[in-house]
Image (cartoon, rainbow, N blue to C red; front, side, top):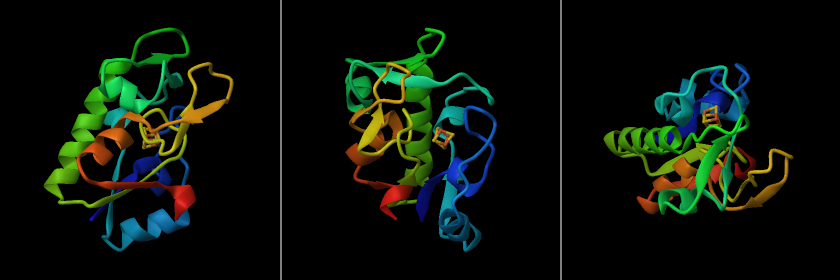
Amino acid sequence: MIIVSACLAGINCKYDGGNNADDRIIELVSKGQAIPVCPEQLGGCPTPRLKTEIVNGSGADVLDSKGRVIREDGRDMTAELLKGAQETLKIALLLNAKKAILKSKSPSCGCGKVYDGTFSKKLTDGNGVTSELLLRNGIEVISEKDL
Ligand code: SF4
């Protein structure tokens, strides 16, 4: 089984209430080969919601208590994104998932590059919090751009 970002499957869980529907991901889900998961909703974030970005590093730094996740109004959302990552990992382990295809650039789902915490659309190297936690637990993570 493959874990996929729910927004890529057409679920309206994106921060602005929309989605990032990708026909290849929708096909995987409709064939029963993938399960859609939204870490931020699982972490208790509402939809729609304000944007969040990682400051002082990437998801690895957040897991290591060196980085934080901040909402664009300044509120600290680290606890919510950590909870969402843990709940996503729980689902992945329940399903014995070996692979995840997650939405690029997101502070939760990003893989390889994430927004840099300045809310100016600039990217920095690193993974989102959920991607990093899945990787640390032996699950392969790619973004939809790598498909
Ligand atoms: Fe999509 Fe992941 Fe953001 Fe949820 S947390 S909206 S699944 S990118």
